[in-house]
Length: 348
Image (cartoon, rainbow, N blue to C red; front, side, top):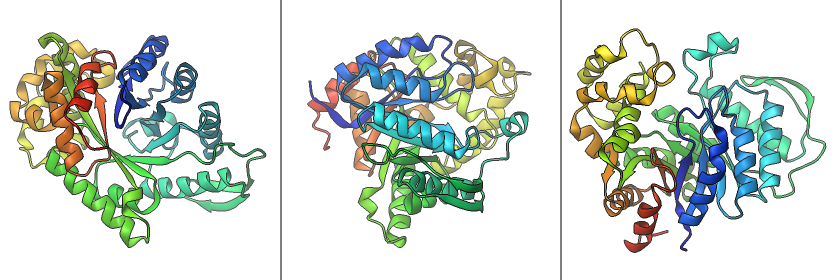
């Protein structure tokens, strides 16, 4: 089986009331040849640290990555410990993905609103803890008095990637992070522009631009039935575009019509639900997807045969992405896409 270092896959995408399903999905991902297994987090029964531990124990080769842990949900020392433990447990295969995306949740959790300045401070603190330094300072990520590790990670420090979409976040990723995780439903042109922003920021910071890994998320439905594809792609699109602020960012980056967003948010099936992703099951979101133009799915996702979806992923690789992260389809469902990835000779 070929191993695709430049092809990743999400496990337990979306809501996951039974996190135990990750064990089979992780094994499926490794058998199919995916290079990275990505784990998103929900603050209920999908804690990223616990799930990544299970994935690391179930696999032997794939990288295990969080996509993502949100700033402010953990104290920096707790986060550093979780990442160092996962890196040690996996034999150096762990990748820590961080992001801001809490939005309106922050006040209900009693934590400050996440900021890019806080993330920049946080990644600096994490790296110094992993290097054995004693951290005494105040900054956007907190106030510390002699905070340190007693034992250091045996496999070195885990890479840290930033999930972001806007130009300031992309510049931060290039300047201070080991990589960037790009949002789903970006067009090939938008990804190419993002890559240029990241690489340019890295160069201005005196870093090797090629050393900053760019991961782009491709929502895909390879060889799926129409009903399953609706859940994997169309309903997932609604869960993103319905969110105020995020929807505007996505259509702005892609050059799409922002008027579509208000038509989507007024759809009867979304009435009174707040944030659709937490208020509704995914099957309820399919009906409102009728508002979204077909071009948005053609330009920002991949639906069709495994070969077609692999070819779409290859377009993103050609645009400068180092890794294509398959989202929506399970590892077993995306196995045909992984096989086609090798067949079309995507450069690794």
